[in-house]
Amino acid sequence: TGLDTIYYGEYDNFGPGAKTDRRVQWLGYNLLDMAQAMNFTVYNFTLGDTWLPQTDIPFYGGLVRKE
Image (cartoon, rainbow, N blue to C red; front, side):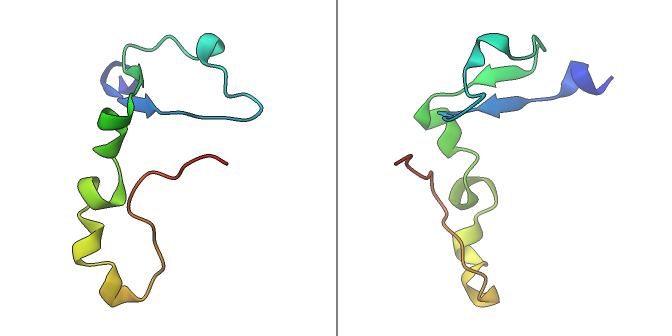
């Protein structure tokens, strides 16, 4: 099933509901560190910096810092 093959990564969430102690217990649920999360950014996951600029769609390719 999908729950047996899903990969769900969570990195540095904040705000209401951000505590991870009540998350699902799926095998594919992962708490990520910064290096792992960087693999899923626009720059690294979709190589968006090579093709998004020509679309004139505004984007930020890295991780966003919480204020």
